[in-house]
Amino acid sequence: MPSVMGLLEERERAARQRVEVLQAELREAEAVWERFMIARETVGEVLAEPGRGRDAPPAVSADEQSVRARTAVPGSLVPHWQEGLAPTVLAPDYRRIMHVLADGNAMDCRQLADALGLERVPAKVEGVRSKAKRLAARGWLREDRPGLFSVPAGRGGGS
Image 1: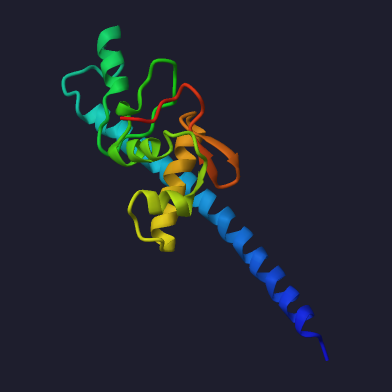
Image 2: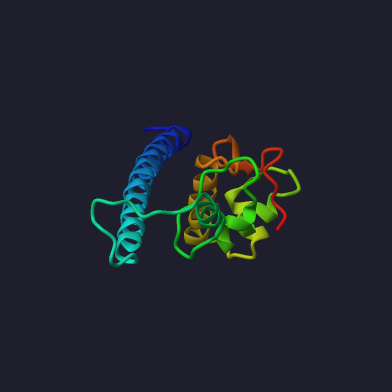
């Protein structure tokens, strides 16, 4: 007869393997989702400029490019962080995450969800995790260890 501890260890191992599989599926689904967002944004840009030749790229001044890069558009992608870029260019949900982390303390996604006033349910926490991962991938946040996020010095978070 197997021991209780042995049975628990077996179930723990199986649960851990399931979590790893689900995390891999989530990463894959997020990558697919991000590609669709990029495609939608690109098609929207192309369709928004009637009368332009198909071969000729639109003429955009450096000033206009700078304004476009610094203006948040609902549903737009998170821009890569660069010197002089303030969190105000981010969509509101992303700015709120930056603001919560502005004090320099690292937080995990459950703590972030609490600080943002969200229910601590898996759907809300995973939404925060997805946004924090995107901010980290674009250089706005640092992921100190898996799932623990903070604002690197010089990124600013208060807005």
